[in-house]
Length: 235
Image: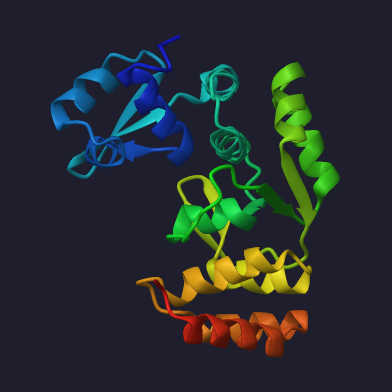
């Protein structure tokens, strides 16, 4: 197995999270030079290549994912990265329903003022017990125990809409705000989400926000939080 701390390990991580990337995309994700990415990726025996149009796409081979993903997960010191890799692993195995939600989902998408350095990791799924069983089967022993102890699995009957980030589905900011309000999450989290949405360079999806808030019965509360964030300004 390649060293997780070397260039090859870094490139493997990006491939694990995204599923398949071209050399140009790997260059962009890793920040490395094109020749370094090309030659380093070509030297990893567990990576296969496919010519698609003008690009050469790289992918971790299907027959080794049950070795590679647990290895990458076990070498991580960041619980956030562990969760991302675990969800990407399940997606490679055909399970693509769970969403990453909460603080981690917000920070993956938008700038958050005074962001929590160790954000709560939240996985949202319509079948929490099924997800736990998938994780226990896919990740044996200590890896699974540590992973499950560091995340909050929330039953969510309203999984859509989501943003796709590689193999990972992430709750959109508008959904995060409505969920936080509807589920009586701490006021500071709700304020952070509302501020991040209001001060983002991306436009607020007002139609999504209002229709989803109406569905969850918190339309007025959601509108109030957005209004408060707009009036408070952004230092």
